[in-house]
Amino acid sequence: MDTYKIIEVKQSVFEDNDRQADLLREELKRDKTFLVNLMSSPGSGKTTTVLRIIEALKDEMKIGVLEADIDSDVDAHTVSKTGAKVIQLHTGGMCHLDADMTKQGILELGTEEIDFAILENVGNLVCPAEFDTGASKNVMILSVPEGDDKPLKYPLMFSIVDVLLINKMDTINIFDFDLEAVKERVKKINPNIKVIPICAKTGEGVEEWANWIRSEVKSWNE
Ligand SMILES: Nc1nc2c(ncn2[C@@H]2O[C@H](COP(=O)(O)OP(=O)(O)OP(=O)(O)O)[C@@H](O)[C@H]2O)c(=O)[nH]1
Ligand SMILES: [Mg+2]
Image (tube, rainbow, N blue to C red; front, side, top):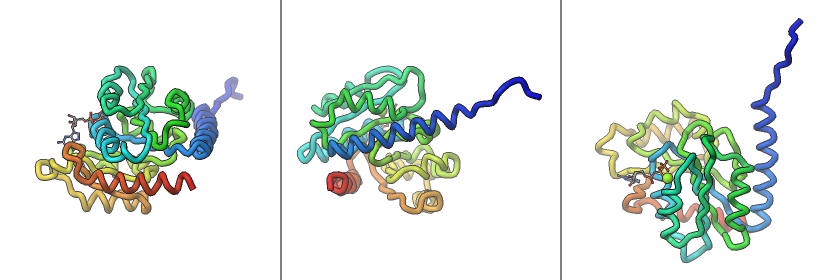
């Protein structure tokens, strides 16, 4: 007979996180704050896209930003120049944010003053997909130089997002990136996903994402 017990710790961690995430979502709904969890690989253009969306929406809604990184405050410093309220979250080595960490950031941000909050998650295509942050919606960026095979290699991430932004479209002729193949691959994993090609560098395509946010903020507040 075995003299030791095996406990599925991972499962209980996820269940506990899911409960906290649902509670946070309810609070955000009550406070009329729409929170987007923005995920991607390192360097795919999250901060550049955040700057563009602030530019597009800053005259219509009060925007707050949570910048999550293992270390440093370079992204918070960059975003703070827009005038939006920014909180930098350090994960202390963790490769993702969970609902409790997100809640701590939201409390610092203060929901009364914020209509639209955006969480730039830690750059990673694996761990952030496993933890519900309590956000209203999940959005991810796949940038052209990463390659069109990523939906095949990281299906979980592509399965949990509402919107896929395909960034760095200005480089599509340099890399062998098949946009139609990506659309087909992601629709197989997630038939309801909305795919928006953008170029955060020039701002091209960002208006379509801004329109999606406008419409989601409206329904969140109904
Ligand atoms: N050519 C091109 N470069 C871009 C575009 N968007 C972002 N970049 C560049 O890509 C690099 C990384 O962009 P960031 O916005 O810092 O990426 P990030 O995802 O926030 O990076 P981490 O926070 O480190 O994960 C920078 O040099 C940007 O100027 C784009 O649309 N086209
Ligand atoms: Mg960044």
